[in-house]
Length: 197
Length: 95
Picture (cartoon, rainbow over the protein chains, first blue to last red):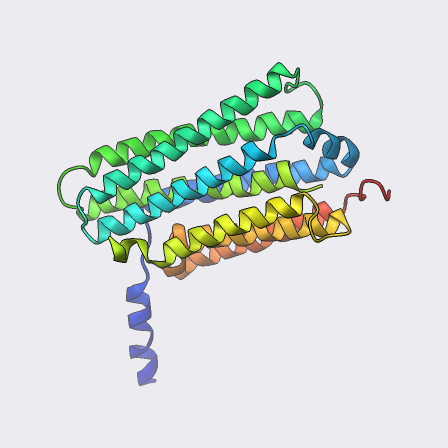
């Protein structure tokens, strides 16, 4: 009886909610919406495997891999930035956030190159079901990337001066969590659209 | 700076990049006679990557248990549903 009163406390105290609770409601809502889209894609793929597989050969895996590398690296920089803020490493946090922003901009540039390549080849949203899903899913994701890069700039600017008090730390963690969600959605999108046959 | 870089976060990033290269190879059918086996492996590897992003980058590993519970439940349900839907499709040339 005495052990139950004393044992769980240290473990509980060590647990930490990253960012605001509200950001997690938003992130899980977003994950649910995308999961539904992923499910719809695989459900309708069942009826036209050959069309989907054939259409997939027109996607550039090089662009896909490059963007995956950019997203993963961007997420890594953001995770390091949060850690640097906890260690109170001064300008290291905004520098890392700007590096993450650079990767985000790189992702957007690659995506525009990819879209323009498709459009020049006469491939659009109306070409077939596969490309409809491709443009809609990657388009919604790209909007997340654009919002995320704006958040990264805001965070980088706001962490340039002063101490990391609890409020600024929470803001940083909230923005970082959103950016990591954008990264993880791309990981699944890349597998679904570019890789599985 | 050393304590910042030489951390679990960097190890996870390295693993994620390596897993991406592996999945890319599998997308070209390396090591698999059946594309469906390659497809399932690609999906599972993608979700393992997602789990590392959630636990280590998003710091859910040390988050309150209810948050980790929601994340782990989403992970299992989404991965299982997508693999099931993928396997429900006829395999291209064999069908």
